[in-house]
Image (cartoon, rainbow over all chains, first blue to last red; front, side):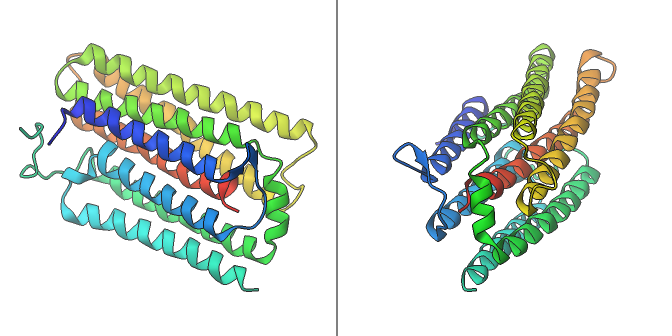
Length: 95
Length: 190
């Protein structure tokens, strides 16, 4: 089913906002923000940020209609960034 | 029914030059983020302690404001495509208003930090905090010029170029997605 574009844009915005609130909530415990090292929080927050970026790029920036080269370049950049960030975090946690 | 630009009509939104710029900016900001992660790994305790001084609520609010602004901008592009130029103009002005709210809230947040005695040189984390948020706000300010061009295009029937409206939107959405990572790295990661 394909929603009219206006509805689709609103749904996209709603989803992005929901992910934002969830990532904020993940960092908190009992209404208080927890400031202890946590790989679970970091992984989920960075992956959710990546998801948000991919949705912004493909829906708002209309890359889903763009030639494959542009889509692949944006995906390659995002994959590189996420792997670098999570990789550095994981390696750093061992020292 | 598919919308106007179906899968068959593959095309680059806006000017290709703007996409080259977006990729360049994405790489430049990635280098900042990677250096941040590298240095953070050397002293995570310092970063966690410092993160505690940031207002998480501010961070979430900033993110939501920019997401709303991007939503308005996407609707502006759609309205211009459907030749509803008055609506498109209203949407781009709303985008700019959200951008303004974002900048004002950032200035307020910085002044709060400074009054608490937290400065650029307070520690490594806060150097990153001021640097990343300031360079991002600079991009928002440049975004106002970009939105100004879109407004200029939309106001006169003689100018209206869909391609320039889309180019402006591409820039604005880039500013939004760069903030998404800054928010994750500075405010919420642990």
